[in-house]
Length: 439
Image (tube, rainbow, N blue to C red; front, side, top):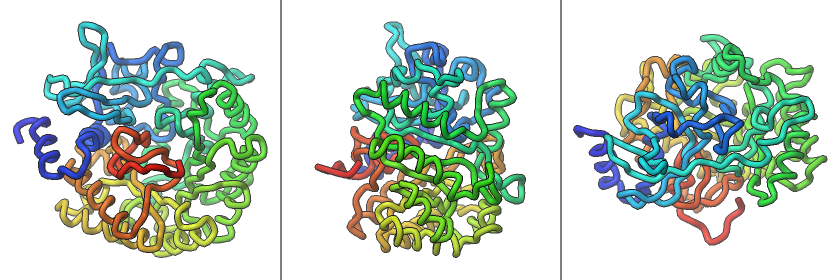
């Protein structure tokens, strides 16, 4: 194409039904963005909400490779507006890549902008430091460490177990850097609590509830690594579930409660429901049978793909199909050495998975794959999947939802370009705005 701008504009022209905002957002998510020093935050002492590293690194380099961005964190997210493409308000999760053709920098008037191929393509907004981040827990820990918020304050992200018991090359998912992210933060001397105490979580939520006077925080997600044995004497359902139970008892109805866990047997899923969880995310990661085995070896070994899918369907009997929302990692379908070689093949496979679940009323969602360099797939595929794959996925996703008469899933805020806050993929930006929806 000759330039990144030419590629992006070509895709916008070829796929006019995909919002132009989503084209830029997917490119930023798949390939990252560089930050001029003028655009970095002053960490928790500044006026900008800094990146919290809430579960994965979501960076294209290790902390030592990020330079000043490792010392003065970039913002948690950025908002794109205006510019020559007249972009509507678009919230994008920050994935740092010093080599990216995209760069955030301040102009001569101190106004932040996003630059591509040296040209300013949009204004950039950064999240203000929330008042609740300015208050410490009684033990001195920060709210950002215990209960960070993302999606422009909509979601409280509670990674209560910061490592995964799928460990080593024969068990770890090949695109996941949760264990490395834990190690790099500890090596850098940053606070990064491995197992979060339930009382610390409750205290952090009390601070958020007290100072979030606008009630911007609407949902919480309980998540962390897979548990194949026990943590603190609890199995996976009881471990994650007991946080939900404590939260719902202390703050009944304050937030939409969500849990990301493995696809568990029906009795375990019932425990989540009994503890007060409202939405269950048993992520299936990648649809293709062979790729699941190669890229999710621990999940294949302990559960198996077919059983994983059966458990997802069973969980709909407990939560209702609309409240079962499994995630997949969009892009790993094309990852070498085993992935599909063409966009056509990858889209066909992924759409097959969408149809499987959506035909049963279950609406998956997806996270745009970030090829973190410490993962096997990140090392082998530093450029990630082609941008065309991501744009065509947005088109296929919306078409499949419309075919089965489904609407945007609950717990993600408003759908539609200019309205969506979900920041780690553009699926909500690409759906039609709704007059009224359960957010």
